Amino acid sequence: MNILDKILSHKKTEIEKIPEIHFESSNFKRLSLKKALKGGKISIIAEIKFASPSEGIILKKGQHIQIAKDYENAGAAAISVLTDRRFFNGDIKFLKDIKNAVNIPVMQKDFIISKKQIFQGMSHGSDAFLLITEALNYNDLIDLYNLGLTEKLESLVEIHDRENLLNINELNPMIVGVNCRNLKKMELDFSRFERFYPKLPKDSLKVAESGFKSTKRIKIVEQLGYDAILMGTTLMKSKNPGKKLERIIKEL
Image (cartoon, rainbow, N blue to C red; front, side, top):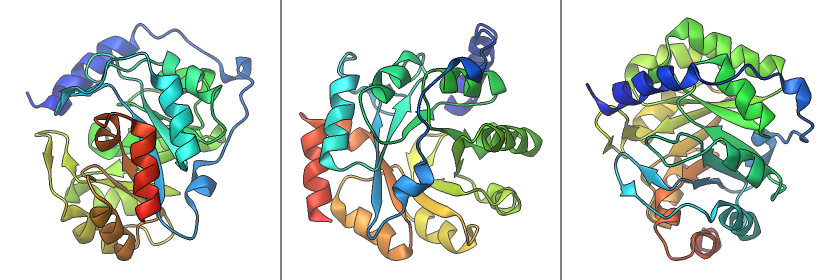
């Protein structure tokens, strides 16, 4: 069983324990991820994650609020928050903490396969959520994407495999992400950004994800035409994630 299958298997068990939550009970002000990522130069979604299957423990938990504030002050367009506990040391409660601390969009990043997860995220203040095409069949992808539209909640639809390019184009999402990490083997292939770009939906806002360790690589995907990048590990492994992001933005 590969790592993606392990995560999804555990996620199904985890979802059974999520109570039914209605978004009407939430009064958070919704911010647009798409609007935040539009700009003159490439935008950065700064990520908060304390561990990952590829890196192990990255940083001790407990600093998420300060890191989020530092990201905002450094110029992040939005913040991605890992909410998976088992494999990424995240917590759904991080969403509410961070939403109450910043004034930029907060995205729920998890392996979302159920509407219950989306409603749970909304009740904790998410402005947007991640959908991974490789984790869903096409009908479920459509249902979860449309739920977001109904609730006026944006989603970043992520792709890793060439086989899902057809589904991405049929769905034509507002925001599409290309992840250069193979979630089954956790391997990076930076060339995927260039190979996939011409085949992405023309009107979608495009985000490049994973593998960014220098401004050189960011500038490469900007030249390809990407509107934004998602960066996490490089920031979180530094002594001061906010200062690291600030230096990167100044160099762009």
